[in-house]
Length: 185
Image (cartoon, rainbow, N blue to C red; front, side, top):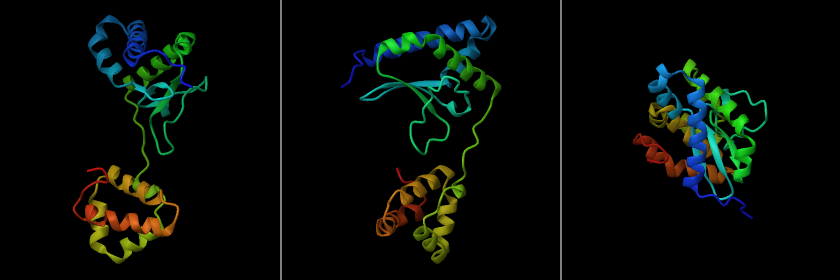
């Protein structure tokens, strides 16, 4: 049962007010313009059926001393969420949230970057490897894709549990790869 009775706009306003207050306290007046740019890149408010979340774009770089940060998915490399199911949780954790926000602002200000896995570091299904070995044009077309597109295809192919399903997915995507399109294009 969903206990979260606050509308998304009210939740967003509540979080944004807390983020703004925290940012104002942490940065001096001279940096107001930079502050706006920095706080625009640190987090996003997300609304789901069972919870709302404050997701930090570079959450993997934050020190999670309170154990609140959760990876939104098994293949997420950088983002981390703090999930809420009630407004009382936000109010009770205000000082903790301020600390996470301050930490995220510092990460952004220092310019730290996430080092993402390259497509070659993901598991390559043997059916896909056979197709690449058989067809040099397919291999060249796949290597010409952006790393994000390569990653999407590899995750799509390896997501099937059975060999026959993987082979079917590969066959369906073959033409898209040859034309240089991504999985979602």
